[in-house]
Image (cartoon, rainbow, N blue to C red; front, side):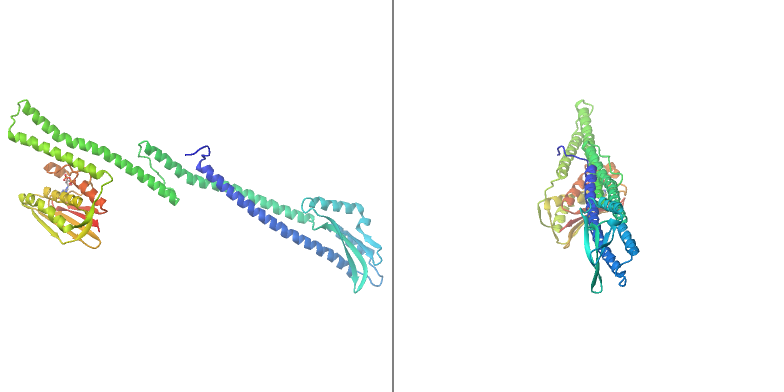
Amino acid sequence: MGGATIKTLRSRLTLTILAVLLFTVALISGFSNVYINRTFENYIAREEREQSESIVADIESRYNALAGGWSEDFLHTLGMYSLYDGYIISVADARGNVLWSAENHDMTQCGRIMADIAARMAGINGGGFETRDYALMVGQQKVGSVAVTSYGPFFYTENDYRFIKTLNAATLIIALLAAALAVGAGSLLARRIAQPVARTAAIAAQIARGNYNERFDEAPDTRELNDLAIAVNQLAASLAEQENLRKRLTADAAHELRTPLTAVGSHLEAMIEGIWEATPERLRSCHEEVRRLGLLVQDLQELAKFDSDNLKLTKTEIDLAELVRAVCRNFEAEAAKKNIALSVCAGAGFVSADKDRMNQVVTNLVSNAVKYTPANGHISVVAAASAGAGLIEVSDDGIGIAADELPFVFERFYRTDKSRNRKTGGAGVGLTIAKSIVEAHGGTIDVHSQVDAGSRFTVTLPR
Ligand code: ADP
C-alpha cells in the first residue's frame, strides 16, 4: 500500500472540493464577466453612434434658412457639450468653410479630453480616435457638413468606466467569498467523513491487538459511514463474544473433566492403598465414571466437529415421520423403564435434509425428554411437513426449565441447576449440537418451558 503520495483523507477531500469549487467559480465569473462586458460594450458602441447622429440632427434642426446658417452661440454651446461628452465636432458650411471647430476653439481642452479617454481605454479595446463625416441636410438641400471625432469602436465615459470597474470588483469579491466558503465547507465535510474512517481504523487496530472493547460511541449521520460504524461495532462485539466463548469453553471443559477424574483417581488410590477393598461394586462405579468421561470426550469431539464452520450436510429427501418413528423406537425401552408414555404423531412429509444429522437432533431432544421427565410422565413427538417447511416438536411434562435459565440451554456445557442436582444430565452439549445442525440447515430451534409443567422443543426446517 502506498508510496509517497499518501495524504490524509481530510486534506485530499478539502483540496478536491476546493479545486472543483474554485474552478466552477472562476468559470462562472469569467463567463458572466465576459458576457456582461460584451453586452455593455455593444450598448456603448450603439450609444456612440446614436449620439453622433443626434448631434447631426440637432444641428440640422437649428438651421436658420433665412440667415442661411447657424447662430454662433448655438454651435458653441452644442460643441462644448459634445466635447465634454467626448465628441469633438467641426461644423462647416456648404462650401466647406469651417464655422465652428472644437479644436480651433480650445485646443488644450480638446487635447486633455482626448488624452483622458485614450488613457481610460488603454488596454480595453485597442481602438483609437476616428472621424466620421455627416452631410447636414435641410429638405433635399445640403446646407453644410459636420465631422464628429470620437474614440472607436467605443469608449467609456467616466461613469461607464466606474460602472464596469464596480462590476468587476463585485465579481472578484463574489469569487473570493465563494472560495472562502469552499475551503470552510470542504474542510468541514472532509472532517465529517474522515473522522469516522479514522475511528474505524483505530478500532480495527485495537481489535488486531486483541482489545475488543473499543466501540463507536456516536453513530455518524451519513448512511454509508453509519453502516460502517454499525458493522465495526458488530465485528468487535462478535469477536468479544467468540473470545469469551473460547475462554469459557476451555475452562468448562477442564472443569467437566476434572470432577469425574478426581473421583476415579481418589477411589483407585484408596483401593490401591488398601483403605478400600476393591469390591466389584466399587470397580463398577469407577468403570461408570470412566465411561462417563469417555462420553464427555466424545461429546467434546462432536462439538468441535459442529463448531468448525464447515459443517457439511449431505441432503436428501427424507421423510420426517419415518425419522421420528425410528428415533422413538430406540427410546422405547428406556421410556418403558421409567413408565413414561412415549407417543408419536406423524404424517408422511418430505424435506430436504441431512438424515444422519437430523437423526442426531431428534435423538438429543428425545433423550433429554426421557432424562428430564420423572416416572409416569408423558412425552409426545410430532412431525409434519407442509409445502413451505418441516416441523418437529418434542414435548414432555417433566421437570421443565426456569424462565431465567431458558435463554442459556442451547449454550455449550449449560445445565440447569435442577438437572445438575439430579446428576442425570450429560455434558450439556446436546442442545448446542442440535442447534448447530438445525441452523446449518437454515432452520430454527425454539423452546417453551415451565418449571414442573414440562418443556416443548420446536424445530422448523425449510423445504
Ligand atoms: P445435557 O447433556 O445436560 O442434557 P443439553 O445441552 O442437552 O445437555 O441440555 C442442556 C440443559 O437443558 C440440560 O442440562 C437441562 O438442564 C436442560 N434441558 C434440556 N432438555 C430439557 C427438558 N426436556 N426438560 C427439562 N430440562 C431440559
